[in-house]
Amino acid sequence: MDRTSWIGVSVCAILFAVWMWYTTTVYPKNHPAIHPPITNSSTPSPTTDPSRISSLTPGKPSDLKPSPVAAPEQTTFLENEFLKVTFTSRGGAVKQVELLKHLGKSKSENVLLHQHAVLPFLARQGWTESSENYTLDKQGDRIVAKSILPNGLVIERIYTLKNQYQIELQETFRNPNVQPISLPQFTLSIGSGEPVHLHDQPTYLKSGWLAKETDSYKSHALAEMLSGFFSTAKQQILQPALNLNWVATTNQFFGSIVKVPADFKSVEMICSQLPLPKTVEKSPSLLGIYSTVSFQGITVAPQSETKGIYEIYTGPKEYAILKNLSDFQDHIMDFSIWGWVIKPLLWIMHHIHRPLAYFGNPLELNYGWVIVLLTIFIKLCFWPLQSTANVSMKKMQALAPKMEELKKKHEKSPQKMNEEIMKLYRDYGVNPVGGCLPMLVQFPIFLGLYTMLQSAVEVRNESFFWIKDLAQPDTIYTITHLGMGLHIDVNPLPLIMTATSVVLMKMTPQATDNPQMKMLQWMPVLFLYMLYNFAAALSLYWTVNNLLSMFQTYQNLKTPPPKLHRVKKKLPFGLGNLPAK
Image (tube, rainbow, N blue to C red):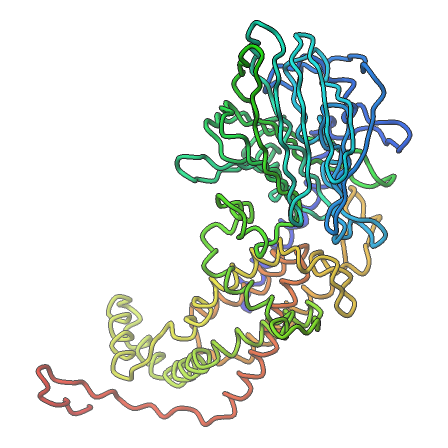
C-alpha cells in the first residue's frame, strides 16, 4: 500500500481502539441502573418477584409497588420430547420454558426461556390489585388453572402441549352473577427475550407483532433503547398496535409467539428494558427485553361464559419449523430483503447436513463440514464467472503500458485523457470493472449468509477443530489488564480470514494505478473489524472461500497471458465488419 493507505489504516485502528474503550468504560457509567445486585437461587431478584407487582397501569412499569402475595406459590409442569413447561399459580401462567434439545450457556444445562420476566409468561394484570392467583391442577396431559376475582368472575385456563414446541391455552370467563361483569383494560405478558451468551447482540433481542389486516410485521429491538452517539437511552418503547394477529418476544436464536384470541382488541405494544442479574461474579451486567401488550376491557353477560384460545409457539427460530405455522409466524426470522437468498441456502445446508434423510439413514454431518461443503458448492457455481474476471484483470494488466502513454500524452487535459482511455477499452474489448463483477454478484450471497449464520440455531454448540461453538466467536484466550477496562479476545479464525484475503489480493492480477483495486485493498481490514466478534461460522465460510479463490487464481495465473487485439466493429443491418485499425 502507498503512504496514504497506511495512514488510513492507522487512523481506522486508532478509531477502533477508541470505540472499544468507549463501549467498555464510558457506556456502563452512563447506565448505572443496569447493574442489579448479584442474586442467588435462594433469594429472588426484586426485579423478577411477582409480589412486587400491584395495580400496574398498562404501559407504565414505573407504577410497581410492594404488595403481599395472597398465597404461597404453587408450581407444576408439562413435558414432551421437546419442552418442559413449568407453570405457576401466580397469574396461572408459565414460569419458565426449558428447551430439552438445546443446550444453554454450558453443555450441562438446557436453554431456559422467560426465566427473569417481570411477570410470568402469559400472566395478566389490571383486574386485581396484585397478580392474579390461581389453583393448579394437573389432569393427565393438561394443566387446569382456576381463579375467582373479587367481583365473582371465574377464570379457567387450560394448558395443553401440542406438536413439538406448541402450546394451546384455552381460557374461559364464567359470570355466575345476575348482573353483567365489565372488566377494564388489561395487559398480557409476552415474556422476556434474554441473551443466552455474553456475546449475544442487543439487535437480536426484539418484540414483534403482526397486524391482521395487512399481515405486516413490525418489531423493536433492545438496541433502539440503548444510548449511542446520536441517541439517548430510554427505558421503554410504547407503540400503538391495533388489531393484532400475534405478538412475539425473541432473542438471537429462540422466540415465543402468542396468537391472541380473535375477540381480543389490542391497544398498545410495550417493549421495556429488562435488567438481568449477574450469573458469575465480575461478569458484565446484561440487559434483556420484556414485552407486554394491552387489550381493551371485556364484558361477560350474566350467567354466561366467554371463551378464547391462545396458540403459542416457544422454541428455536428454525425456519423448517416456523414456515409450517399459520399467519406468517416465520417473520420472526427477520430475513428482511435477503429471504430470497437465505431460504435456498438453508434448504441446501439442511440437505448437506442429512444427505441420506430421504432414504431413512440417520447419518448427520458436523455443521462445520456442512459450511465447508456449502462454500465449495457456492464457489463451483461462481467458478466460471471468477475465471472470466481473472482473464479481464490480466487484459487490464496487459493494457497498462498503453494507458500510461495516454496519461502522459494528455496529462494536461483530464477529460480528454478519460475519453481516450474509454476508447482504448472499447477498441480492445476490455471491461474496466470486469474484475469487480464477481464480488458484486457474490455480495448478496455473502449478506444472505451473514444474516443466516448469525442467527442459525442449527450451528449452536457445534464444535469444529478449536472452535467450541460455531454460533460464537472462536475465542481461545482473552488478554486482560490493558488499562481503562479494555480487554482483547484472541480469535484466530478472523485473523486467518484476513491473512488469506491479503494473500489473495496480492495474487490477483492488477493493472497499475487501478482505482477499483486500490479500493479493494481496504476490504480485508474492513471485514476483520466487521467479523472479529461475530459467529465463527461466518468467518469459516469466508476463509474457505478465500482458500478456494487462491487455488483458482493460481490455476488461472499458469495460463498464458492474453494477446491484445482490436475488436472488430460490426456494421449495422448485417453489412459485415469494419477492418480493425
